[in-house]
Each structure stands twice: as structure tokens, then as C-alpha cells.
Length: 92
Image (cartoon, rainbow, N blue to C red; front, side, top):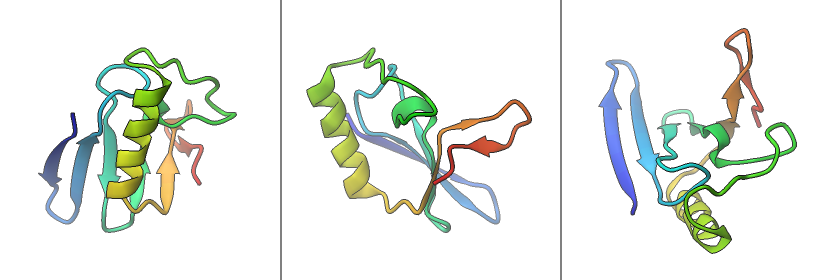
């Protein structure tokens, strides 16, 4: 289920991870290892986003996917979604 694509943007390396069943099908995490930042969309959920819908798989599959993400990525900052003005919201 797990897949990885790497992008070389010249001065920065970016990784696109899919760890398996998440919220909607095809959840992809954009990860910048240099700064340990991840853009997760609604793969991760909190009070800003609301309930996780689990459109692909159930809670057990989702927790397994979260565990694979945690095992593979060292995340210092994560971003849930952009705001209306394009600035990241939900930064932790």
C-alpha cells in the first residue's frame, strides 16, 4: 500500500508519500525532509478540520496508515490546509 515519489526542485527535495487507506482515497502527504515539514490536507484531523470521514477503509486501516506515517517521517511542523489568502493554516 505504501508508495513514495521524490521530486528534485533544484534547491529543495520534496517527497510525496501515500501510506495506505486514509480519509479519502489517494491521500498524499507532501514532505520536505530538510525542514521536517509535512502538508497533510485532511489526512490528519483536529478541531480546525472536523471529523475524519474514512471514505477508504475503516478505523483500523486508518490507524495502521497513521502508524506507518509516524514510523517513516520525522515531522516538526505540519500543515492541514491553506486559508482563503493562501497562507497555511493549522501549523503545529
